[in-house]
Image (cartoon, rainbow, N blue to C red; front, side, top):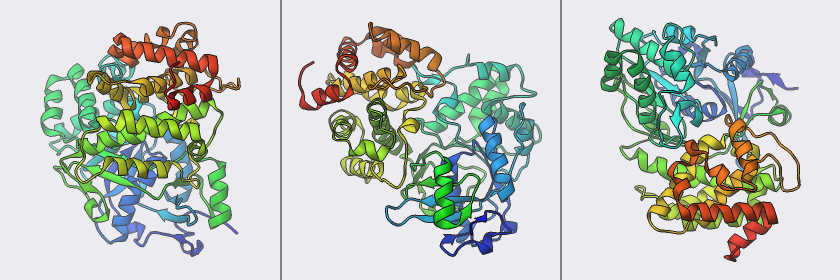
Length: 494
């Protein structure tokens, strides 16, 4: 009979389930994490769980926090199980379950963020970590710079007594600590954004510019924003995962997380008020974070985009099934080796082709059960970060962009909201209200999609890119995805 997850039931869980080797009462908070979703619980929390299991740094436990409705739902799910999480690592043929316990509390989620600001006033909190998604940083997609006119920023700039957004909350808390003579906390982004530390500083300091120039100077001069690269494939949790956990491992968890066995964390060592000894549990501290970060964003995240849209148009649901499709896998291989990897700068100690082989094997893991809809979501924020920079690099080098233009065309065709077979689906994108009408108009006029300047920027001015995008999109509408992929792989002119 399956047992519900809780501190009281830990000892009675099946022996096949690993559990914390430390006492929860020995932990003290040192990190507040904003945006406590699946990825954080399979990544940062697991590294800390390993460290605590080694008997070290028990004053760096996590307090969860959030500002979105999803954060409130997560808090509600985890509270009855004492903030514990079951993590299932999906090694093919050897799945492993462990209960992790580095989180010792979760700040109530309210509309004005006051509870989080209050929690950040505790001097014991020395690090604030973030997973607020790529779209949460108020970046202008076309320029890659902070957008001071973003509605969330505009609201918080005029409501700093009760901010709603992440950066308004951080700024209010930093101001409070400064005014009380407390050292600022370090702000550590764990999102997939190039130079995520700098981007986070730009958002916090950019908001401060609108409020108080002296506070903006304090943020830029005193507060630390280390860059990082994070990696672990973590699918969304559904009733499928809950059922597998209960039947296979005998644990009832309101919100378990399943993930691949691979994980990686590369960090810039810039923590003025201290940090846990994460290097002892596999975290790489280096001054070359940007190189690792660019490699991952272009090859892994760009690879996800490359398979998401053709697979979605073909009605394929699981990522491993997409990798088993010769045309989808062939497109990924050709795009990576011919157009993406040649423009990724060298990474210390890494062979980029070997890294791609590892990535492809991870994508093909059938036990992970990652889904195409998850990879395809939020394209309007992800394309400018994962695909279009490679396109720009090739154009600047005078190289052909047929594959990258086809990838953009596949995204455009996907944004129209129907598969090749005519099945309708809902586009999961915060800008769906703009991109779907543009994608439908592009069926007759491909330039209608490229006119989304906040996404494509000056790429829309490239005659080569426009021409190859137009050819690819016309082919997708006229002949379908399979025929268009086959034409690209064979090198047959359209």
